[in-house]
Image (cartoon, rainbow, N blue to C red):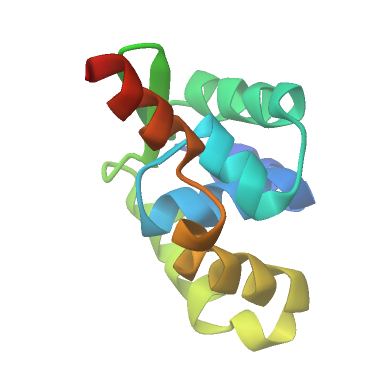
Length: 119
């Protein structure tokens, strides 16, 4: 992949925040919305763009779709690692990572819904 699409992707704060979360773990849309405190349509649009650029993969479980960053793009992964290693310069990104680490306190809505559906 060329540099330009990656830097365009990272230049948008919401896309940057989403892809950094997905670089840490696989998440569903509702979990991303909860961590970022953003609307579902906005996050879905971001995920669609990331999918179009072939940067994330998705997996459907029942009615829920889980996303993660693809391992195949070394340039993107190296860039994300650099950003994660230097988070102190970006308070909003630090906050996102802290909220992700504690997501079980207020998220996993889809996981609970999925368990109820399977039961």
